[in-house]
Length: 278
Image (tube, rainbow, N blue to C red; front, side, top):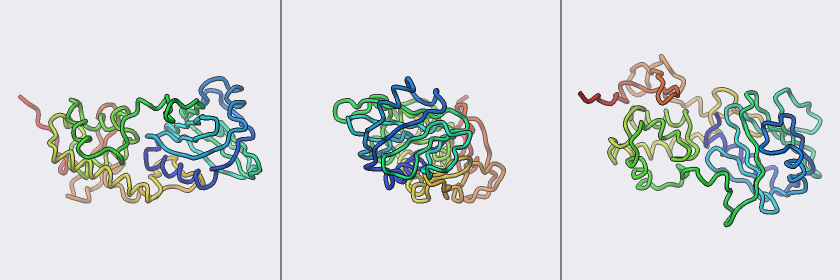
C-alpha cells in the first residue's frame, strides 16, 4: 500500500501538472471505486477547477472550486497516471478524468480494486469531513506530543504506529524501518517505552520518511508516481522484506513474524524481544 512518502510524491507530481485545469468530463468504469452514485459524481465534478493539491495521511486531496474536495485513497494497488488522451486504457483503468484544453488524461488504475474516490463538500475552515478523525501527521507532530500520545496507550508499538487514528500516513514499510533504527521490538508495549526510546523512534521515523520522499517513495510491488516512474527508497531498506538476510548493523539474521495481524521484519539482536513477566 502506498504510504506517506509515496502519496506525497504523487501529490507533488499532480501539483506540477494539473493545478488550474478544469474538469470537462469523467468516466467511471468500475462503479464500486466511487463513493455514491456514478452519474451524480460525474455531473458534480464537471466544470470544477483544480485550485491546489494536498495530502492528509495516505489520502490525495484535490481542492476544487465551489468548496469541494476530491479525495482519492489508493489502498493496496491504486495508481494515478497522467497519460496522453490517445493511449489505450488497460484492463485495470477504473476511472478516467478529462480536462478542458489539455491533451492528457488522469487515469485511476487499481488491480486489486480496493482504492476509493470520493467527492465531498468542505466544512467550516476548509475542513474535510471524511478525514477529520485521522491522527496527527508524523512530520508535523512535536516530539513531546508524540511521546505523550504513545505512552498514553497500552498496546504493541507496531500496530499503534499503523493506526491511522493515532498517526496518519505510516504503514508497514516505514514502521518496520523506524522501529529497527530506534532499536525497538515491534511487540513492545507502548506504555513501557521510555521517553528517551520514544524520542529515538520519533527522530528515526521523521528521518526515514523524509529520505523516502527525497527518493520518490518505495517501489516493492506496484507503486509508481504520476508519470509511471518507480521510487528508489527500496534500495535503502534495512529490514523490510529482507527476511533471512544479514542485518547491516550487527550481522544477525533478519526475521519476519506476524505482529498485530501484519507481517513484521526486524532484527532480533538489534531489537530484543520484550521480557515476559513470570
